[in-house]
Length: 418
Image (cartoon, rainbow, N blue to C red):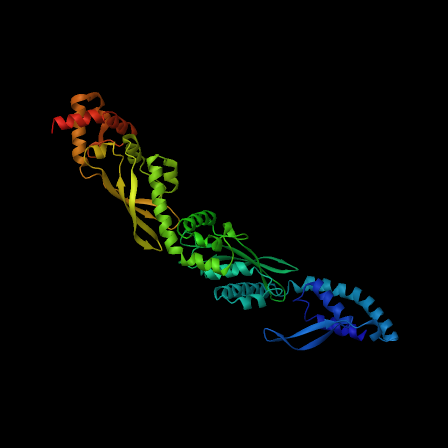
């Protein structure tokens, strides 16, 4: 019984760090005579490896064996009481300190991840390698450099403290520039003895769409890298490996330029189709000059963007400059203005702003000729096609359709009066 008393006394110092289940298991192993055997010469991360063995029945003399059995029976009763005390007292006496330590350990996990210290992450896990190593390696390759911020203990249980943190990424990383977002959330579990395991890490919003764009980019420009970057088991089809992350990071700038020009071309397609909903959805300020679009649509101008170039590339986005080619059968080419230019401001997350779209060079003279033609030949339509939008013309679909309808007659009239 003295052995039992010694063990229970010793348990008082361990009870607050160990859950009751682990406490009972620990005491039972010690009472049964579990012993530690040193295996010479074998080390793991500089530590001597040990194994634990229990004595055989023959090793316990007959009379002590009976006392040992009685002690074990008593232990089953007393240890239950100790476990109850540990639950009642151990989780309340140091609650504040425990939370602070759990948060510190969670932040330490982030520090090791930023440093790419895989050995430290393994050593700090509940068992050797019990964390998502490929996922961590992927972050290291991407150079996301996550910072855990606003950490708080969201849940406490017998298993430990569940810590939830916001995650801030490097502004130059793939998680920030294409997505326009810098944070999401991570959850870790800190066990009572200070081990940290990764419980959940939400992907940044919009990553699925960016993944689809990145796959299209690789298929078009670097098809030999598709299998390296994409594979089973990752976010949005991405493969979780350091090589995959490094490849994404290496080709990030080229991808963003490729994507910006693709967004410009999509903008032109939506403009040609007068898809106001799509244009509104991708507008930087959420509003679109619908009158300008409707007028072009009525004119059947069908603008095509050609020779697009990136003229500015910063962390705030891209400026894409393109030539604008119009339908050769529409108004502008028929009167000598086949093209102009456009400048688009494209944010990293794909929103579009039109910074410059100058009218064809001689649109003012075209407006004067149109007013003279309709006043002379179709005065009842003059009020519909004139206005104050630009060059004395009204920018409406109806106005554009009327000009397009009378375009052949207008061309003949201007040639005769030139």
